Length: 351
Ligand code: ATP
Ligand code: MG
Image (cartoon, rainbow, N blue to C red):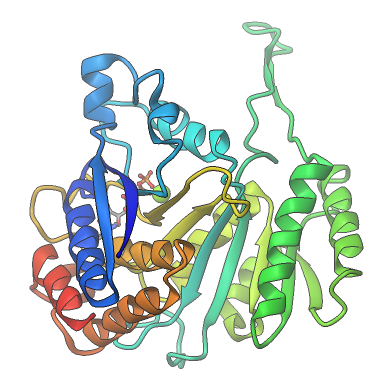
């Protein structure tokens, strides 16, 4: 029997409602595949911030450094500014644990109404790989000449060779393992004339080591149009922190709803724990009603199983999700009347 130590951070809002369903399904998968979990529940959240003045304890990262993975719900709640929850919890974990690859599958699932006309399950099945540690999301810069007519704000992007090469290598490795062996790069080297040409140059250099992977690149503006008009073109799409962020919400938007989409923040070298969370946020508008869709959280759990080296268990969870989406109970966001718990229980039963 294999036991995994998982740090659980339900966080805020519906994070607290969907995480227990994720755990329910992982427990069911564990029973079937001979895995056990030790769930270490951590209250780090906006509520914690209001009581303690910080999103997590000062030694927070050290407390979870040796866990096998982190299972996160959502953080952020009205009353605490977004940048506090982001820079106080999510970003320290992503950067502190070198979770530089943010992987978000974009797949049209059976039973999900696609906002794009005439698309069937199977037509859309790709992965967005976002650089998660550097790029445009830097804190280098500031305001100058404040209060004068010359007032300005400047912020620098940072693209290191180490950072760019490791995310491109991760994306090429992934593309190489997939049947279509196709990798698309998001760029904007016409407008962003220093960092993006550098990104393109490293993309080309890395591609030389992967002759079997077909590559192309698009400027981010037209790429967003292709996501909507030609989603079947894509297999693996890699982008910088900002472009990857945009594409990884647009992708799930094109396949129905962000409520069912998962996200993995990976430290591929496994030096530190990786973190698994749904794409959606804490959704304060529906919190407390028991109607949040738990599928994104549960799918994140399936990705966690794969990462922990239990691909059969991960695939069983994904298959159960597909069955329930196609013909099982649905939460109101998908046109049904089921509760969060109803959906979680149905998926757990199907594993
Ligand atoms: P954050 O800044 O934390 O990412 P956000 O403002 O982007 O949050 P979300 O919390 O992701 O917003 O959700 C946007 C809206 O989508 C919610 O207000 C909610 O109505 C709906 N929604 C999101 N997730 C779910 C879910 N799991 N089930 C049902 N509805 C959801
Ligand atoms: Mg959001």
